[in-house]
Amino acid sequence: TQLLEQSPQFLSIQEGENLTVYCNSSSVFSSLQWYRQEPGEGPVLLVTVVTGGEVKKLKRLTFQFGDARKDSSLHITAAQPGDTGLYLCAGTGGSQGNLIFGKGTKLSVKP
Amino acid sequence: EAGVAQSPRYKIIEKRQSVAFWCNPISGHATLYWYQQILGQGPKLLIQFQNNGVVDDSQLPKDRFSAERLKGVDSTLKIQPAKLEDSAVYLCASSLASRPDTQYFGPGTRLTVL
Image 1 (cartoon, each protein chain N blue to C red):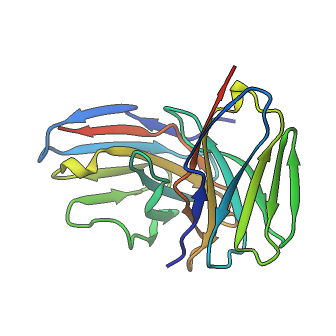
Image 2: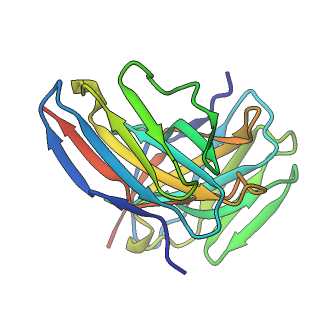
Image 3: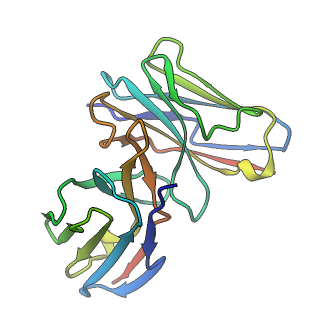
């Protein structure tokens, strides 16, 4: 069974701080996605990483896929209150290429 | 472009009652997914359709859950009878058949079973 472990589970920081959240697995994934979910809404796709070692930047967010394609990290620089939400990683696995989600990191950025 | 639509947004029922959720995917998306998201967890896939056929329903509790996508567009997920542990957000997502790694989610239906 492919599992994704996310850490930390909860993170509360002040505006302007930097942070990193992690997504780890013992399984290899063909691709990995990061989503952000706000209360009362569905997850919104932020990025897909495909190649081992790949780094993608989205404004203040930097995503990295591990060389072995088993883990990923999300780094946020100078966090803002608008970054508050649940950050989910999901790996593409299974015979149908279905998404397998981690439990998420709940981020709170205080002004 | 319109996103994935779901209704109702909220539903409160008593255990042993029945409930149905509706989803309208993004136009042109052949693949439709239903997920269950329990509080504090990530979404868990219940069923995947490709057009009007079921591709994967291995995690659907078939004794009480059913889903259909008769015309290959809209879909309905039903729970009958509901249990307390079914309290969750039910998310619908859709994707192009060639891109299961890029899924677009609706806002979800929050179900509370009392």
